[in-house]
Structure formats: structure tokens, C-alpha cells
Length: 268
Image 1 (cartoon, one colour):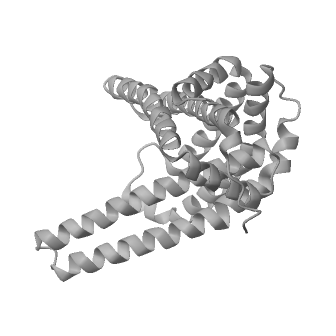
Image 2 (tube, one colour; image 1 turned 135 degrees about the vertical axis):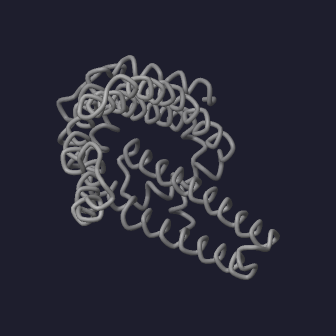
């Protein structure tokens, strides 16, 4: 399967999974409204400082909720791609079934890799910039190049992690086995996978831009809670579209090219 066809499959998933999108939309609205009620509409820097600890706890809770819901959402999307039917009866059960595996891939593996990566990138860049005391163009350029390389590697790691989750769902794999297959798949389809994620990202930018543009226009007429609630609704619409569209496109691509995936278990 090619990139363009996978993008089309993602659009088909969006059209066919409106009930699932409604659930994702509702969750986004509730969680965003809850966060807004804690932060406030126009928080001062002093208030942000005061509630930093609360925000960190809320962020961790929301992240765990996202990992918990991912399994059920992904299985529903996968089943639609395979059967063209929508079945939400097993949504909660699949959330429970895959929660541990998705959590393992993202924490500690994903978080650990990114912490080491960003620390190393920032440390090396800082060394070069410090060598030039922030005034030497050559050392500043080297530091900038290191940051760019760090960002590129971080993106590739994120893609590998998402592919790992995809194989966990598609083949009902354990976390490490799914991650190995995801990495093998990325190795053998590297530029096509990069093209897929780039294409999906471009498609998401369009509704995101429209939402931001509408938000700017509304800000000229509205303010306070009215504007905040509308922005929450608009953002939730983009998020539910993005969740189904991206997962639908990636699952379709992986299923269409799964025979090329390499399993590292035999070599390990």
C-alpha cells in the first residue's frame, strides 16, 4: 500500500467512525474544561507559579487517561479498517487489555529514551555555545545543528514508538515484541513511513490552521469564558479528527505492508 492510499483510508476511517469520534470529542471537552477550571481563563504568572504542582499532577493524570483510552480507540479503528463495521461494545475491555502494554512502550521506554536524548543534545549544544561564549557564530551554528539533529532523532523515535504500539494492537503482541516489529518495519520502509507521517501531518495542519484562524476572529468579538469554551470545542473537534485520521492511516499502511515487517525476535 502506498502513502496516498493510506491517507485515503484515514479519511474513510473518519467518515465511518463518527460515533467513536463523538466519544473522543466528549473526553477532550471534559478534560480541557476541567483543566481550564483549575488554571482560569486569564491566569497571572503568580497564579501559575502557585498551582505548578497541581498542574503537574493533572498533566500526569491526563497522560495516563490517554494511555488507558488508546487501546480501546485503536482496536475500534483497526476493526473498522478490517470489517467496515463500528463496534463500541468492547471499547472499555480493550482499554483495560492494552493499557499495560501501551504504558510500558511510552513509560519507561519512550520517556527514558527521550530524556537521555534531549539531555545529551542540550548538553552537547550547550558545550559548543559556551565555548564561543554565545558570541562566536561558528560555535553557535554547531550548537544549532546539534539541536536540529536531536529534534530529527526524537521524531524518528516517536514514529518507532507509535509503530510499536500499532503492532501491539494489530498482532496482539506484548510490548517489547511489538516495539521490535515496529522498529523492523521502520527500517525496511523508512522513507515511505517518513512520507506517510509527513503527509498525515500536513493534512492535520489544515484543520488546525482553520481552527486557529476562527479563534483569532472570535477573539475580536468575544472574551473570557465564552471564548475559552468555544476554543475548547474547536480544539476538541480537531483532536478527535486527528486521532482517528492518523491511526486509521497508519494502521492501513501497516496492514497493507505488514509482510515486509522484520521481526527481530529470531535474531535477538
